Image (cartoon, rainbow, N blue to C red):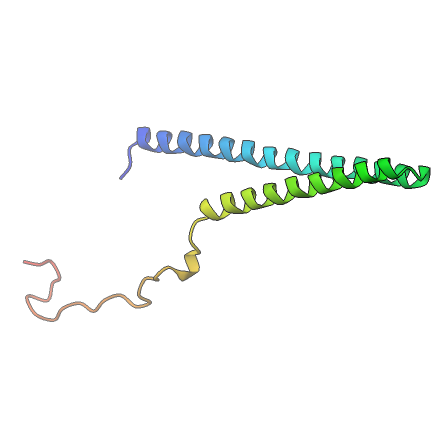
Length: 115
């Protein structure tokens, strides 16, 4: 049986793990929100460029969209790789315990004490 100290240590380790995971989750959210904001700004930039009829402004917006697409693709690949690398194997594929307990040997004294 675990001692109180061992249980406290385990709880503290779990708290640290949760805090670290929360920090990573928040970083991912900031990244995604930043990209969404940047995409909205470029969309407006492109609309303004089209409205002005300025070919250089239109090309600049297209270049910005291309760069954002490249960044988002790289970020998605990095995030997917990190998730895959840190995902526990599917527990439903793990071998399961037998559904019935093993039978008790019939030889010996029959008391099951092993004497």
